[in-house]
Image 1 (tube, helix red, strand yellow):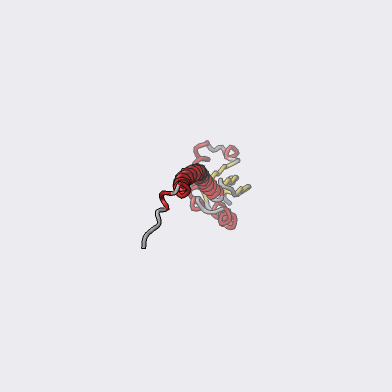
Image 2 (cartoon, rainbow, N blue to C red):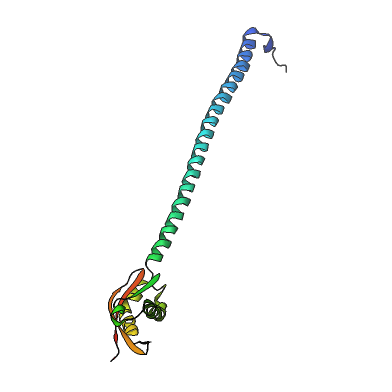
Length: 167
């Protein structure tokens, strides 16, 4: 059996040449379209990566600010400092150093309230008041007691006391 010599006919030669040229042209078009799509998608991916990186940085900044705000709030809800003020020390002809010593002694007595939360300090305000009022101070051979006139419980525990002779 013999294969017919089709390759010698011009119509078949044109068909095969057209198919070959069509294949090359279609391959070039395919490469161009695929490259264009690839470039478009690469650009989109880069933009999305940039957006993701920016959002990650924003998240990091927000988290740091959130942690700082939480730390600040935690500091605000605890007692940080104690202030004691003797209001009438001039009435008993005391010097300012003696008044300072009394204030310092009271601060020392209630220093356990530092770093306690405000609710605990507020609940124990009567105990603080009794601690201050039950203590007797000896200054210049005279004995003095304190009366709590005002107590403000906040991040700074402020106490105003008045002195009087012990009875």
